[in-house]
Length: 465
Picture 1: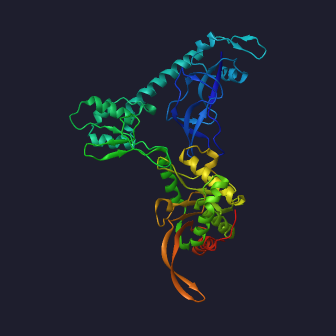
Picture 2 (picture 1 turned 60 degrees about the vertical axis):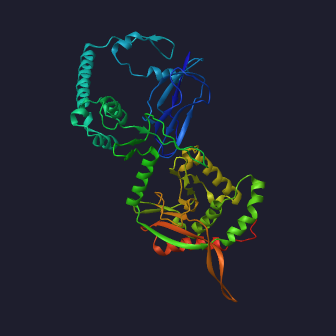
Picture 3 (picture 1 turned 90 degrees about the vertical axis):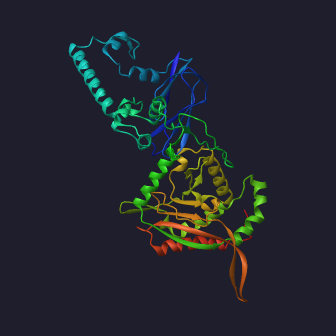
């Protein structure tokens, strides 16, 4: 029998760790090649880790919600073949727990001979005993003091239920360093037998379908919604929501945000798309949405004003050569993610449309790769999809600008011609531009979206793709 060590793979250039979110196999389960063993999450994207071998899962090295470093062993799979030298070396290099284990094992040398380690010195046993006693003392102190460190969610439940400090000290924590978790607190409240309204957990489940969502309320230990006695609810933020909140707060603290707005006549572009969209779908098998058309105009404006395609590091401006457009996309659970179209200025209309549709689909189904949400130089978001007229988006650090487009509406507008003015029904849209006032002044910020607007308004109705 052999052993295969399943390690956390490299997740991207800047990703060094991931959170183990869910085990999909249990110890003793058979495993086939490409079977998904575990789900992991980084600050960029969620991913699955498949097995590279067939065998039986015999050990898990980490529990759910623990942080794993890239290259660390997450699980051990027993296989039918022999152990490889690399696996054997990994096993030999494991530090034994006590000197007795060294005596009980024979370590093979590279020449195939057997090396028996000498008996440990008496001083080693004395030092080991002292270390173990110190560990026990520290462990006892940690156990006594751990209840002082409560998460905000646990504190809110304690306050809502009116628990005293004496009661809190009686709760045995199962979290890191024996700290009290939400699960520990709910278990205690269930046994408390209080006549007050007990806490009941609810879980809001959002369907991963892009077109619809369903809400159900099963009682589950991993739920994120807790009902209080007064009817209020305590909702624990998801991991993605916490990361997004932190990123947005950091951006507001870093950049001097300022906005410019412009109203754009989309009538020519609208009519052109209506004319070609069916042929495009039949020929390419892809829908031609407004997003790639708007990004096309955005790319042209970035070429006119390349300083917007920059990042700021201290007092140094780094103007990017590549134009990598981040495209904000809504996920099935309501969170947002920003996949990146790399070298977007090198793509024609067909390539851009396919890239937009592919990234949007895989964002909704949580199938993006870590490298696909990194390296953006400017961000685009279409808030018109939700019926919004306009908005003031927050800059996606370390970029210096972001454009938001609103819903396209039919509006009466004054048309100026050489024969005189007239009023007609036109299709209008508001473009919002948030930019970093540390390096982009109001003139450039306004001229930039004016350039984008001009490209959209003067769209060639005879343009062929």
